[in-house]
Amino acid sequence: MEFYFEKLDVWQNARVFVKDIYLVTAGFPNDDKYGIVSQVRRASSSITANLAEGMSRISEKEKARFIGIAFSSAMEVINFLILSKDLEMIKEEDYNDLRGKLEKITNQLNSLHNRLTQGR
Image (cartoon, rainbow, N blue to C red; front, side, top):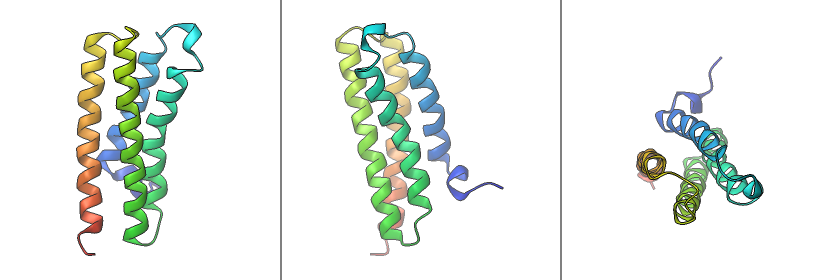
């Protein structure tokens, strides 16, 4: 059985993105294990978690609220990617790749949010 959220392109893209974040941050310094690494992993996972939880809600308003939370988590990830780049913890090519993927995800989140709120 497959749940509705699993069929969403945005959830599938965010799921791959979480894996990418884990792989890239595995190369971060060990002394940052509980700093940026923990925060960016948590925030990226929050995108998929809020999509899953939101799609289980009955009302469009509730669904849209969780999509908004997922979008906020994506902004948090961008913040940590920028900081990682500033601190030279991430390669330029990895930063650009992750940033591009996240921009696609945020566009998809905006589109989904707009579809859910059109009727209001």
